[in-house]
Length: 113
Length: 112
Image 1 (tube, each protein chain N blue to C red):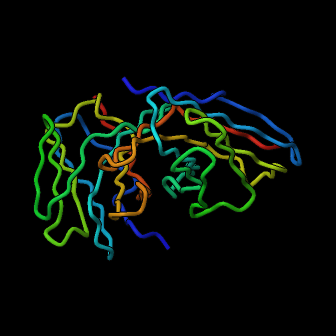
Image 2 (cartoon, helix red, strand yellow; image 1 turned 60 degrees about the vertical axis):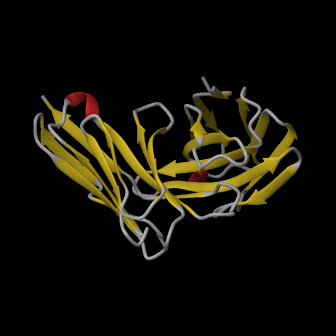
């Protein structure tokens, strides 16, 4: 079974803090994604990576950065957390070349005070 | 601009009733997927439809892809409390490195 894990299920941070969200997949997938999920808005793509050290902006990259130093790990960074970044963050991965199935982690619920 | 409009956003029904969720767009997709998400978990893929007019069945769930590949529907027959959850449709375009565009989601509550 594909397993995508996220470092924390719940996080509480203060405005201005630097926040790291980690995602690890164990199936040697090339592509990895970070989404945020907000009520009534569905999932919105923040960044994605189609290979190690490769990254591309999604639909809402402002205020975020990412790092992919190893194939299995994709990190989302909030350089200076703000209250409007309070959300559920979902990581996903998929193998390159397959039909577009994405495998999701359980999510990290982030509260920025 | 939401490229995928999903309706209804909320649905509360009694066990045994039927329901349909719709996913509509002005864009043509190479494929469309349906996911189900339970509280505290990530979305899990239910089905992928690829061909215009395609119909797929998964037990009591029937998925249809529109002829023009712009819309899709999910029909649940005789809903059960275990069907409760958030249903998401997601569209993909060919050659875009696997990116998906998601609808807003439909929260389904099936009461016993």
